[in-house]
Structure formats: structure tokens, C-alpha cells
Image 1 (tube, rainbow, N blue to C red):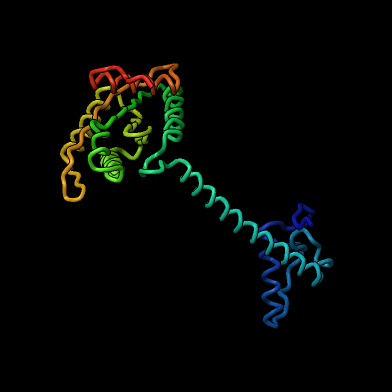
Image 2 (cartoon, rainbow, N blue to C red):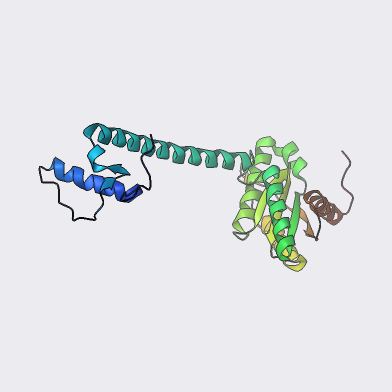
Length: 245
């Protein structure tokens, strides 16, 4: 049932509802329906007053209630979708983006930089000696180390920066509007912050460090190429080529 329209002399939308509500309130209170001067609105929601019977009124109110219910359901579904999307983007272990979401954001920043000629960089981090932590203290300790690293990263970067866990003990940082010097400076600071921030497991301090590689996005470069270049820079910093798998 269509209840809105643009008939001559009619009012649609909120104005029509207000007009009807005023009449309804006056009638419910036992007051006389306020008289309207010639030329005033002669219809409600596009329905001439002569046709605005109690049955039509009830039908309209039922329909408006249904619209309100559907609006609430839509908002709930939108909120649920956003929550599900956030969960799908988050790493299963640490409160950072997973690799898929990180790559998606990198693609977006690459496109933005290409379009507006803006510099951006990616830093690729790798924890040193992480396997030894797992072997010596167990995987629960290793998981706690990864969460510790994630916390240091998130606490010391800009709101506009993008951080993600790329897999295992590897992390990525995308810095928009950052050249190589700025990215190297930030990466060195984060590495130093990890080294000087104590991590304890069952009362025992575990020394942590990480190696990083910086790559500045190039024009025409795709996501895979940028990631590979950053990964190579990190392994060069370790003093060797990336192990073959």
C-alpha cells in the first residue's frame, strides 16, 4: 500500500504525519478538531480528508509501525555486519589486522599515493630467536610474546598507520606520508622500544629483539611486489637471503 504521493494540495512525509498526529491528539483529548483556514492542507499523507476513515487510519498506523520495525532491524543487521567484518579482519591471536586485511589496506594506500602523488612506506618486522622462545618456554609463552610485540607496536604509532601480523613472528607497518628516512627512524625506535621493554614469563625475563626492512612504495608497483621488496629488505638486514620453503 503506497501512502505517500504528490497529489495537488497534499502533504507527504513528516509533515503529513505531524498533521495527522495533531488531529489524533486533539480528538483523543476530547477537544474539537482545530479549524483550518481555506488553502491549508486538505489531506494527510496524500489521502483526502474525506477518505481518511478510521479503517484507513488504522491501516496507516500499522504500516508506519512496520516501517519503524524494519528500520530497527536494518540498524541491527548493519551493526552485526560491521562486527563480523571486524572479526574477519582481525588476527586470530593478537589484536592486529590479519595478513588479508593488511594487504587490502596496503592496496588502498598504494592507489591513494598513485592518485595524489604521495609518499608512503612499509616496514617489515621479524622477531629474532622466536623459535628458541617456543622451544625453551613453550607455545603459550610464544603467544604471549607475540601479544607483547603487538602492544608495543600499537602503543607507539600514529592513528593513520596500519599495523598487521603477516604470519608467524612477522609484522608489518604501513606509514602514509612517510619517506624512507621517516620510516627508518620509526622502525629503529620501535625495535629499540621492544629491546628495552621487559617481558617476563613465570618470573623469568626474556630478552626480545626484532629486525626490520623498509621499502618505499614506487609508482606502478603492485601489492605483491611491494611486500616482496619489504620482505627482502628485512632479510638483507638479517645478513642473508630469505630461506627457501
